Each structure stands twice: as C-alpha cells, then as structure tokens.
Image 1 (cartoon, rainbow, N blue to C red):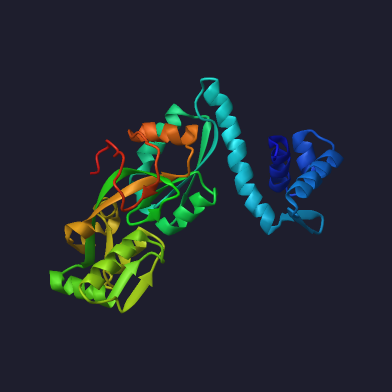
Image 2: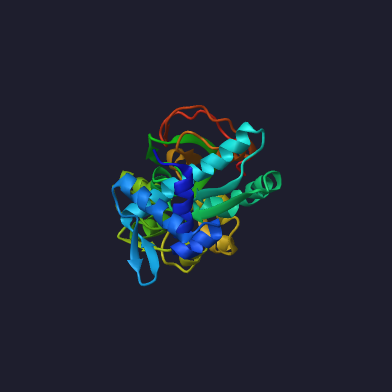
Length: 305
C-alpha cells in the first residue's frame, strides 16, 4: 500500500522542483527525502522523476501518480475534519463551462467562500468533453458540464436550466439566419456540447455547416456574429450578459434543441468539498451513475433566469 507520508514527500518534491528545497520545506534531511522517493519508486516499479541539470521533472508515470496523490491527500485532510465535525478544508479543484463560470457561478462561489473560507477553490474552464476526462483522471474534483454528455462512471446531478437560442447577424429573417448557420458556425472547439447541439440540429434539416469558425470566448462568438461572420448557438443567460447582445438577431429553436441543462459531475465517493457545494446549490445527491440522457435524481432550486 502507499502511505500518505510518502505521497506528501513526493508532492513536496514536485512542488519545490528538487529534493533540497523539498527537504527544507518538510524540515527533513535531504537523504531522508531521497530514500523515501526511492522506496516509493521501488514499490511502484517505475521511475517517477527525470533529472534535468540540477533539477527534477516528472516522468509520465509521475504525472499519473501526482493526480492520485493530490486527491488522496486532500481526502485525508477532509476526512479528519469530517469525522471531527468540521467542514471541508484545503484545495477544491472545480471545472466549469465558460458560460456557467461567467454567469451562474460568481454568486455561488461567493456564498461558498463565505461559508467555507478555509477552502481554496481553483476554477478552470473547458468544453464538456475535456471536463469529463479531467474528472475521470482525478485532475479536478468536480465539474459543471452541459448536455449532451455520457459519463456512466460519474455521479451527476442537474443544477441549471438553460434556454439555447440561435443568434445571427442583425437584420436577417429567420430563414436567412438558418442559411447563415449552414454557411458558417461560430463556436468553440470540438468537445463543446452546444456546438454539438447546433450541428445535430442542422443535420436534422439535412445539412452540415460549410465552415466552422472556432473562437475561445462567448464575447468573441457574439462579436463575430455581430460582424456578419456567421451564426451561433448560446444560452440566453450568456447573451444577455454580453456587450454585443443588441447587435445580433435572436431566433428560437425547437424545444428538443433549446431546452438544456447544466450538471455537476464527480467521481464517487463525494468529498466534503463537493457535499458543501451541493448544499450551496440546494441539491441532494443520490448514489448512482450519471449520464446526460438518463433520468435525473435531483434539480437545483435556484432560478434559471
């Protein structure tokens, strides 16, 4: 078995970039740190580091171990507090769609921080597919993702209702807006669930976009559409927060495309930090696997407007 003390030493060597600095941080002699790392490598049968001059860099196996070490050490800290009647503690690595991070999460994270100031939240954004993979690899603890998605290995709970709309250059008719989408879709990179929805809608009409203009933010999406570059799909809540909201035309979509939900996903078992987030969201998780097309066990009580 892997002992937590060895994992703590391993993490310190990674963070400090070498044995000497890690030993000083841990108040240990360097030979002890070196010996513990060597024993850990022997236990695993792999080299965890590569030497680069006077420093060390992680091997591929070391990268894998680091994500598990971070999770195990975090769980250990939280377990001590949970059993002792305290709340969550330490780092909480949270992933999110950019749309959710920009519109939904500011007030939620502010409330979370007020309730649990001892928790350090590290928020990162990415498309749904990338977030799912990061949760599965323990690179993040939980993530807000959008339908459609498939992740039977993860727990899932619906948190926000979103209305998706088609936006196109101002002054176009509905038919012209659809033709604009057939010519050029403005969207995030592959893995974006909203892009997938738009492409599925167009495929249902027997067409595919001739071109996809990939951008990295919703501000850029709206600006490109306003400039006449093409059409895009986005949540109403996001468009209403953007400066270009009055420079594009809005078109409703069929209910099966327009109605969308954002979910929180995580790998069981949940941690005290995740449980605390669920309480802030106003939802209660029930054990079971998650899927973007399966029945949902609970829904957040917060307004979706």
